[in-house]
Amino acid sequence: MLHQNEIKPIDLKMYRSVAPAEQLDELEKLAEPLKGKQLLYVSSTASGGGVAEMLHPSVALYRGLGIEMEWQTIEPPPGFFEVTKKIHNALQGDPSGVSDQEWDLYESVNRDLAGELKSVEADATIVHDPQPAAARAFIGPRKEPWIWRCHLDLSSPHLATATRFAPFLQDYDGAVYSMEEYRLPGFEPGREAIIAPVIDPLSPKNQPMDEDEAEKIVSAHGIDPNKPLITQVSRFDPWKDPVGVIAAWERAKEDIPDLQLALVGNTVNDDPESLHILEEVRKAAAGKEDVHIVDNFPPAENDRGVKAFYVASDVVIQKSTREGFGLTVSEALWAGRPVVGGNVGGITLQIQNGESGYLVDSVESAAEAIVKLMANEATRTKMGEVGHDYVEQHFLLPRLLCDELAFLAGILDS
Image (cartoon, rainbow, N blue to C red; front, side, top):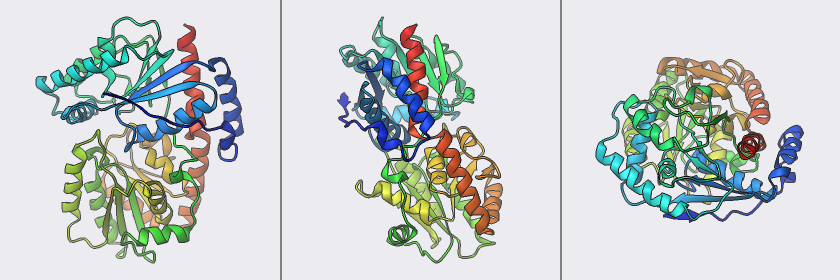
């Protein structure tokens, strides 16, 4: 069930031209006493979502700093990810809940996972999100610390699901959340930290691209580079509200008749619901010639394809109704584009309302923000610059490792 991901180290000096020098200097200091330590990440999948996108460069940079970080992902039996998506949704507030039979499958797979993890040696283990989280409950006493890293918005969980899930976490020594509001009721580990996610500035998705290259790529997907364009980049997920984005575009189009909308997304292994949502999006977009659905770029083209849509867009949308963080917001701001984002969760950490974009609560307010931004190119440019600078200071990879190493040092010393 466990799969080890082989990732080459990257030298910290590679970040000297893109990340704040003070963060890099601090990172070197924090890494020094942990050199030679064996650390372990455990997560559901190595591709397709924001967690995987963060863990790839995190592992590479840890190794470049002399810290032996390993990353194991899981290959569970059929039906498991369907169950964990229901747990995910319920922990974010979906009232549908999870059946006893589904909980039985979740426990069974995690019990098997625990059997494999018992033999994996590490000075500290960090388990990401609900999918493999329950394995700790079946492992028994351990001397080395285990930490649960949650990327979900747990501000209003389905109470019965949270009550059933929390006991699986009781043997963890620490927990990390993206926001204060996300602490899970009924779970009180010895130590907790609030660490916001980040983007990797060295990823092809986040490296510079000129507008000519961007226009060439998006034109191949039916976009007219001579007409205004707004884009949402996200998984096809109900919490991302892609159907609501189409509704907001329709209202904005009443004022901007030639406005185009691109919905750029993917379906991922640990989210089987995404295929259903994609079908709903296609139905909502049927007959609307200026709506372009771009799903699942070929792997070799994915990052640069996404970057092209950021660069070619006048405004980027992330109209989530729940959001643990939303890396696409920082990606778009880093690309110098203002963002209209749902006024929820981690999006509120990234958008400075009225300065780098707008936080919105409805289809109507999203449409109004789009129209307002599209009316003034100078304003869009200024907001993009403000957003880029804010991401540079707060949401790049070296800052994440600084926070994580500081927390790990405290756990390991206690």
